[in-house]
Length: 171
Image (tube, rainbow, N blue to C red; front, side, top):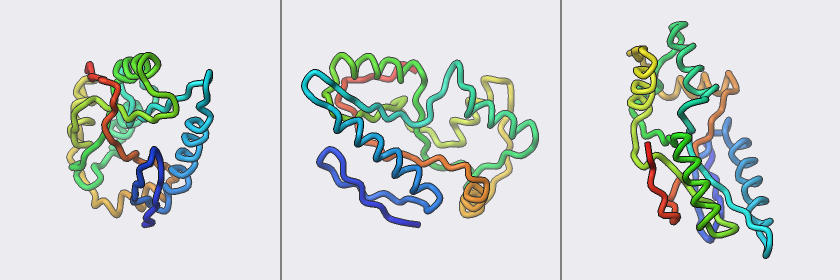
């Protein structure tokens, strides 16, 4: 594990970055900084930072989870009992509308569904909408992380702070 210090918006954030995730997280951070730095009179820039986007049209997350469940390949890392940020696609659209109308150029905005669910709660509810039951099998977090590094499927999580856009999640 590596502790990274990121500076943005006059704030210093110390983030725990797993060695397998740090390159992707750093690349995303640098890209955001370039977008935000491009802000100039007559040329506004903003960055929206949703966590996992879900809802109609999801062609990646839920279909992959469904496939793993159907193949008996899905297990809960650490029982799935950890906070997991989500943002419904309608909430992303509403936040984008508000950001374009009221956002401050050169600023990032963290957006979520406005409530925290555990990963297990979110996936269980999402699978239930498809008539599927979530499996019960769990593995220790260290084993799941080792598997993620070996399979090169990395999903860096973002640190969040509230958005000042008067944004209210709809879903």
